[in-house]
Image 1 (cartoon, rainbow, N blue to C red):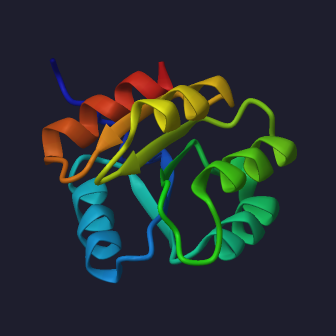
Image 2: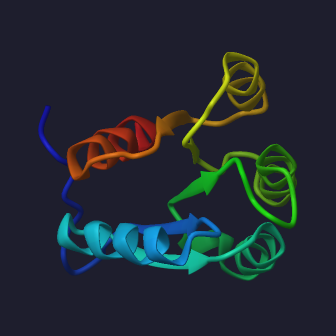
Length: 130
């Protein structure tokens, strides 16, 4: 499956929400190498605040379900309250089938299990962006 490569002059923006600083940085670097612009948040509250002010310029959210300050599913609900059509790709190292069903039932565009490769990330974003 080919990787999605947005136009370099107008890259799609991805909000990366993960409490692991190293993974956030690595994901942002990978996104930039495949043609996306990355914005990052270390916790749910920061992600929601950032999304509230920049929702019109964020194309997809890469949301970890395990956050120290909140449940990822609650963050998903809060993002969708701001912009119901937001595209959210949920991630976790241990996604249970109940959580997957709940995330997709709440409007997540897809799931991505950690650890993910560059190709997995590109394919997940392609699916989420439709």
